[in-house]
Every structure is written in structure tokens, then in C-alpha cells.
Amino acid sequence: MTTSVPRKTTTAFFVQAVLSFAISLFAACVAIVYLPVGIWIRAFLALALLYVVTSAFTLAKCIRDYQESSEVVSRVDQARLDKLLTEHDPFKVHSTG
Image 1: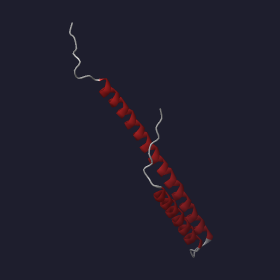
Image 2: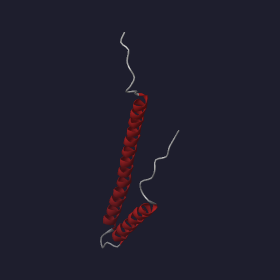
Image 3: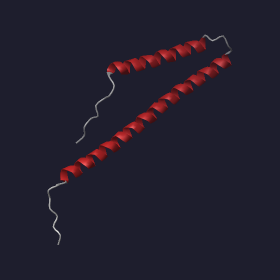
Image 4: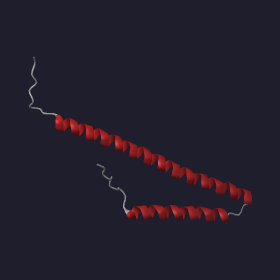
């Protein structure tokens, strides 16, 4: 039996995060394009921005993977505890003999 994990974020929060990212990336790109410097400095800044964006996505994925793995472990531990508690009978008398 598989159960889906309920989402913790709303659609509005997701849209806000995507829009915020898109606007900030667009603003940084426009700033690099209109910066009064040579093409090599612009290229360097654009490459640095690309590196920051890809690193941010990688970091977010690593954090998400770590969080998901800890949720699975805690679910397995909870299932084991539930099984032990349902099988335990405090009124059972153990015979010695």
C-alpha cells in the first residue's frame, strides 16, 4: 500500500517562488548587459551568474533529497514502533518452566 505525502506548500507560494526567481534572474541579466564595462567583464559576470544559479538548483535538490530520505526513515521507524505496540500485550502472563 502506498500513500502519497501531502504537499506542504500551496500553489500560491510555489508561483511566488518561481516569479521571484525569474524576476531576479532577469534583473541580474539586464544589469550585466547594461553595465558600462568591456565584453570580457560582462562575459565573466554572466558566467558567474550562471554558476550561482546552477549551484543554487543543486543545493536545493540536495536539501530536498536529504529531507525526503529522513522522512522515509522516520516513517519506517514509526511503522516498526506501531507494529511493536500492536503486538505487545501487557496482560500476557509468561510461563516459567
